[in-house]
Amino acid sequence: MKKSIIAAAVAASFVPAAAQAQDINGARVEVRAGLDQFELGVEVSDGIDALLIEESESGLSYGGEVGYDVGLGGNLFVGPYANLDFSTAGYEEVDDGDVYSLEAGRNIGVGLRLGVALNPGTGLYAKGGYSNGRLEGEATETVMGETTTTTGSVNRGGWHAGLGGEVAMETGTYFKAEALYTRYSDEDYDLGNGLVGRAFGHRLQLLAGIGLRF
Image 1 (tube, helix red, strand yellow):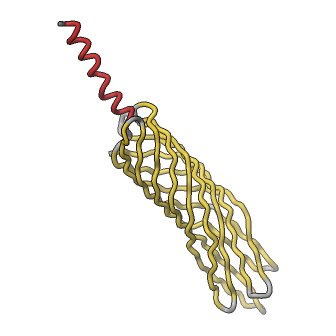
Image 2 (cartoon, one colour):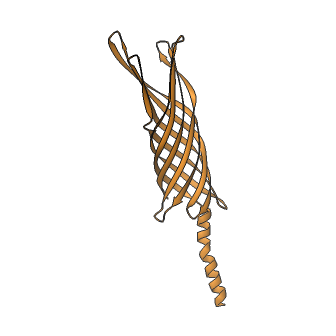
Image 3 (tube, helix red, strand yellow):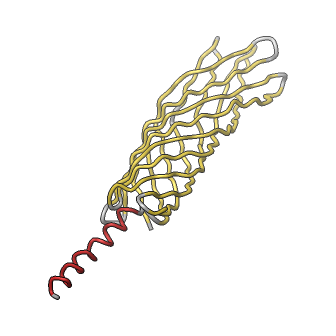
C-alpha cells in the first residue's frame, strides 16, 4: 500500500511539469531592440527625367509587441500578435548642392505565430502577417539663390515572416531572440507640380527582447 501511495505521488508530481512543458499560454507584452538592415528607395519622375535614390543602410530597430498564445495540445501553441517598431535607419544624398534624405519611419505589424514548446516555458516559433511601414523624406533645393525645403511621407503595406525562440524565467518574464524579414509593396504617389514618386523597400531585423507573460 505504501509503495502504491509513493508511486502515485511521484507520478502526480510530474503532471504539472509536463503540462507546463507542452503549453505556452496566456497574454504577453514585450519590448525589443536590435539591428535593422533596411533598403530604402524612391524614384521621382517628371515624365521626362527621373531621379532614383536607393541604398541599403543599417540602424537600430526598437519597439514592442503584444500577443496571446493558446496551447493546441501536445507541444504546439498558436497565437495572434501586434507590434509597433521604429528605426534609426536612413541616409541622405547631395545632388548639385541639393540635399535629399530618406528615413525609415514607424512600422506596424499584425499576424499569427505557431510554435512548439521544448520544455517548461521554452519554445521555438515561426510567425508571419501583414506590415505597414512609413518612409519619410525631405528635399532641400536651391533655385536661383532661393532655398526651399519640402517634407513628406508615404505609408506602404507589405508582409513579414520570421523565426524566433523564447526562454521563460521564474519571475514570469521571458527572454527572446528573433529574425524578421519584411517586404513592402511598391507605392506610387503624386508629389504635385507634375512630379510622380515611387517608394519601395525591404528590411531584415535581428532582435532581442524581454517580455512578461500574464
